[in-house]
Image 1 (cartoon, helix red, strand yellow):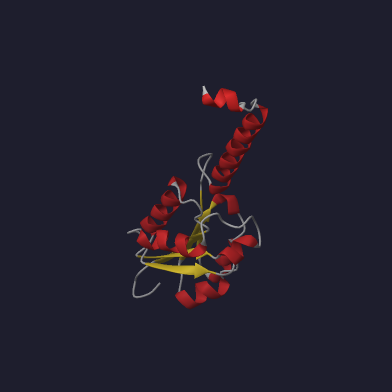
Image 2 (cartoon, helix red, strand yellow):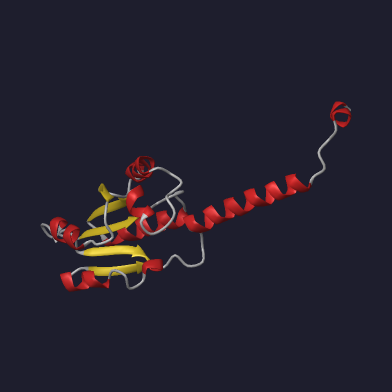
Amino acid sequence: MFKDKTIVYTSGTFDMFHYNHLRMINYSRSLADILIVGVSTDELVSSYKPKPIIPFNERLQIIEALKTPDIVIPQHSLDHSELVKKLNIDAFVVGDDWFGKYDYLKDLGVQVFYFPYGTGVSSSNLRKTIHDSYEEQLQLQRKAKPLTVKEEKE
């Protein structure tokens, strides 16, 4: 706490920004007097899943453009111990797909909230849907009989 203000930190990749990202950031805002949002760098994300589709600087700018965060910072590590100490963070919010991963922050006096994404949209699901749709279109094109020059003119 800083001058009786509750400082909340939330973070994510925020690739292909979508409704569930917005919901988690808005939830974090509801807990905070000061909201800090961390955006994972491409290098960090690439260490545990495929590289984001949207480059880091663009994802950072998208989050900065929101009215909700007070501060937007790059996130270089999944270990938030030093960040929590340096920024006097009172609470941390992360998607429930990380459930249990950040419980160690409780030992540092930080309340940890695992935001329920539910079965809705995720960047990984969007990426898979786009990929599958593209693959399906390629298969259809491969199966289609190519037109002859004469057929194209008709």
